[in-house]
Image 1 (cartoon, rainbow, N blue to C red):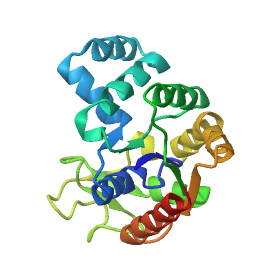
Image 2: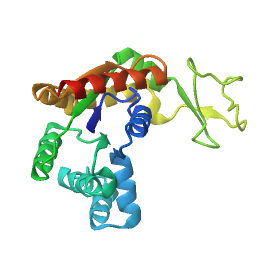
Image 3: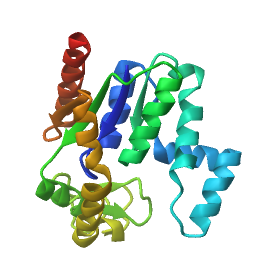
Length: 220
């Protein structure tokens, strides 16, 4: 299957993308991984992206699209892929359509993870990260440490990252509503949109997504 995964920040896209890609046996292609890989390998696209990033500018769509095209052209993506973090805008979605048409392939579904805005704010603003090891992350409500402010794993201080504050989360959601949410209507008009609730246990959401995708696949 060829799937695009969309949804607001805090909806669990990264977690579900990895799980779904494994279940469907297709590569998980995330924008972040594409950038890191190209910059690390010092590809021409990576060098170009880094030049924009170092200057504090947004990386142009054509650079991101070029990276996505290269990755989707690799052998492991021949029978399918799961795109996470791309496309982010209608212009990127249109460019992706052109790219796929040129290869005579098409998307099977666009999976939209839906969660109430206040729940998203609670999820992100409640995160607390260990200063010693950023892989140790707790949540004041859903997975609190045994001792407030102290990492259960190493005893380090837990703190709230600047990009996890409520103010920052609400700004990120504004950007999502303005820039990314329009692609939901774009794909709905194409009959590709599959919306599921992103609330509940991780495994339950995964199974909900798989069931919805199977129904979509059977309907085609």
